[in-house]
Image 1 (cartoon, rainbow, N blue to C red):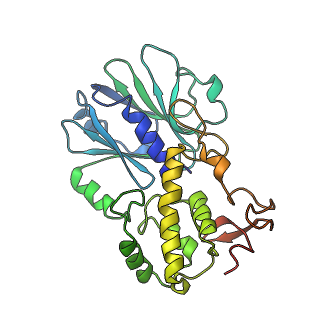
Image 2: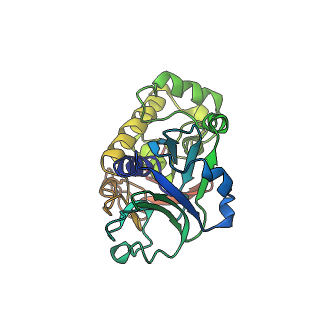
Length: 291
């Protein structure tokens, strides 16, 4: 699943191509989305004024309407931008299904939803396993949804003092589960949680209440450092995540533990182990993260 750096990359890419273009209409190919065409009628002739991100979710704002369009790609979702006057495909991000090289706007197999612009450009949600969701919500509902998300770790307002307060509220959680809890810190997923804990020399099974002041400070610093670096590198690519131009994320080469089970630790030479923590496969070094 794309995490904060990947979604930030998608947001930045889309902002270059879809803003301030008049929306002609929408295509709904999947009843599971539970969209009402009547509700979408009021968005016609409007345009996207901004694309933002909350955690791992994209938030599209409109120029004339206060409603928000929310898209979460989940496991297999793709946002694919197709220029109206060119058959070239620009993948806005997500999973390319290992066929992006031969993909074009006429052979998308798993279209669930599309935004059609007046100039014939299109933005498709393509999703083989149908886990991704799209919601059109009124501003009041959006504000309620927004409150369910925790602190944004790449924002300047993400302060150590606030992080310490969160730590104090969840003393019995193990630190891996804490980092994955989107109501506490938004956007961190499995990949970056493992990388943050390795860089902090903290075992993923440690209870939050057992962490020292220095360890808490180290985790906080590594959250900011690693996520900002991953955004700069346009995220991590494992099987088939690509950005708007079809480029792979550059953070893959910088991973220290995630996906490296039984390989030697770059710090000490011990073999990286993989265990189950908080319901997720978790990679760590048994020597460097012994505590």
